[in-house]
Amino acid sequence: MREARPTLHDAITATALLEHALRPLAVPPPEEASGAGNQGPESVVDTADKPSLLTLVCGRSKAVGELEGVDGSRPFCTPDGVGAVLGVFHEGGTHGRVTRVVSLDQACPARPFLSSYKGVDVVCAEPGADYSRAVTVPVRGDAPADPVVPADAVTASGSGLDPHISPAYAKLQAPRVARERGADVADVRELIEKYTTGRTLGVLGEPGVDVVGLNVALDRAYPQQGA
Image (spheres, rainbow, N blue to C red):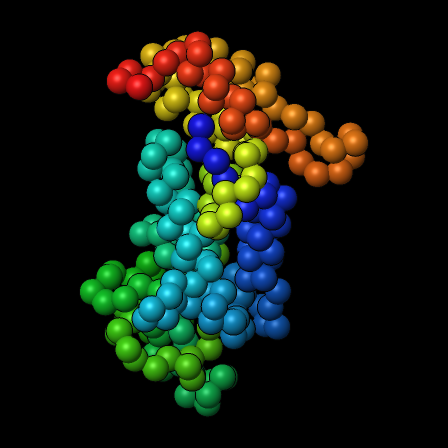
């Protein structure tokens, strides 16, 4: 099993906060867009030398989905695993007729995730171009509200201090782990249940799977070939 970083609580909180930050709007949502408003660039807009928090989440979700053979789609993410964020230019600055639309996190020659917005063709982002005058419009898309890839699977840090992952993330990995170890997936799920701990004091925190203990048990019962 793969560990999630940072802590399980932080992982769930970070993703929930990110998705929540994209929802509150000052105007009714147009077409596919869930809302409009200038979000912080570090949150939703990539830069030349640094991907946004949203793109990091989208890319990780896509990668985990491909690894585990499940749908890795997520709200506000494009099919190619970056932020689904439009830069909308208006004739009057922030209001008025739309004159130009750019998919901010899809650098050229990428194909924009939307063909048009409010009757204007959407184009890819030219590297190095200045889009600071555009209104940022995150687009929710049609991904499920409850993604198949759980929150702690899409967050990561360099700490590596938390030896627990969520039961949902462990169960997502079960079929692959069973295949790689020549085990029955039901037996792997049974071990996951065995190494799942409850909430602290029965109330606080989230249930978690002891990855270290689980991997030791898997190694004993189903040694990996070549290990």
